[in-house]
Image (cartoon, rainbow, N blue to C red; front, side, top):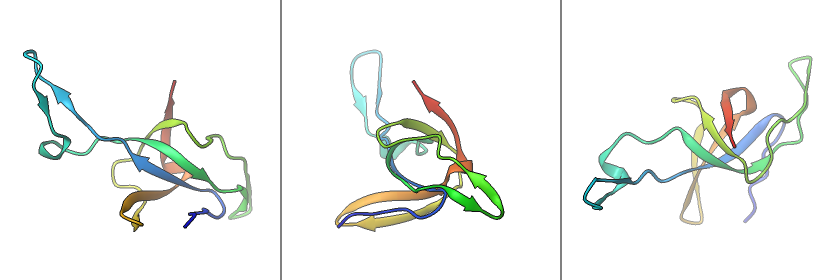
Length: 94
């Protein structure tokens, strides 16, 4: 199944947070708050949204930081994705 966003929507997959202690022990991401970093999986076409021309500024494969409580979480074929508006993406990590 392929997830195709509409309008100015972007499908992202949250990056897994792992933290390593000074002694090299890896702490799993579930023990901490989820990071706000994700990888872009799919991007909508943009177009006219609410009377304004929207051009998409992100592309598939970009690593981004998004708003904390943004988007809608969906689970497709045992994978979890978040669908957000492009305006909920705060920055691209280069």
